[in-house]
Length: 229
Image 1 (spheres, rainbow, N blue to C red):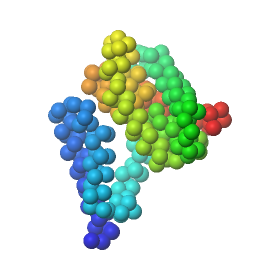
Image 2: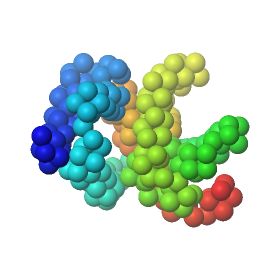
Image 3: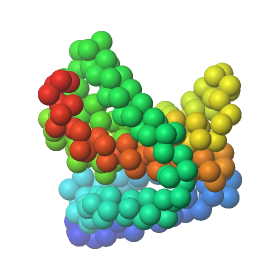
Image 4: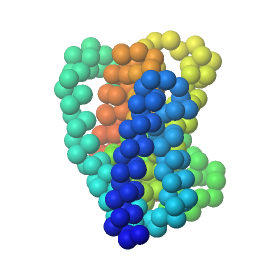
C-alpha cells in the first residue's frame, strides 16, 4: 500500500475515531470515555498494529495540528459572547487567571528543580497548564519543544479532569465560580469540558479563565523566561 493511501486512511480514521468517541461520551458522560483520554490510545494502537510509519500518518493529519492557529483566534468568540459574565465577575476571573498562571509556572519550575530532567523536557514543562494552542506558541520563549509541550499539556489536562472531584469534595468547594475558575486555570480544555458537567455557569467560567490564562502566558512568556530558564 502506498504512503499516500496510508496517509488518507490515517486521516479518515483519526477524524472518525474522534467523532464516534465524542458522540459516545456525550451520551454516557463518564470520565473514562472522554475523547482526550480515549482517542490518543486508540490512534496509537491503530498506528502500531498496522505498522504505519509516522511520516505517513502525519502526511495529511498534520493539517489538524495546523488548525490550532485559527482555533486560537476563535477563542475571541466566547469572550465576546460572555462579556456580561466577565463584567459581572471580573475579580473572580482575574484572580483565577493570575493564580492559575503563577501556580502553573512555579509548580512546573519546582518539578524541574526536584527531578533531573533533560533541558528540552524541563523547558517544555513550564507551560503545561495552559491550553495547547497557547502553550505551543509560548513554549518557544522558554526554549521548549512544541510537540513535547503538547503531550505534557494533554497529560496535565487528563490528570486535572480525573482528580478534580475528590479535591473539591476534600476542600469543600461548592461555588460554581470557584469550580469553573479552578478547572479552567489548572486543566485548560479538559478542565473546561469537565466543568461543563458540573453546570453551565461552571463551564462558561472555566472557558473564560482558560482563555485569559493562555493569553497571559503568551504575552508574559518572554518576561517569565528571564527568571525561570
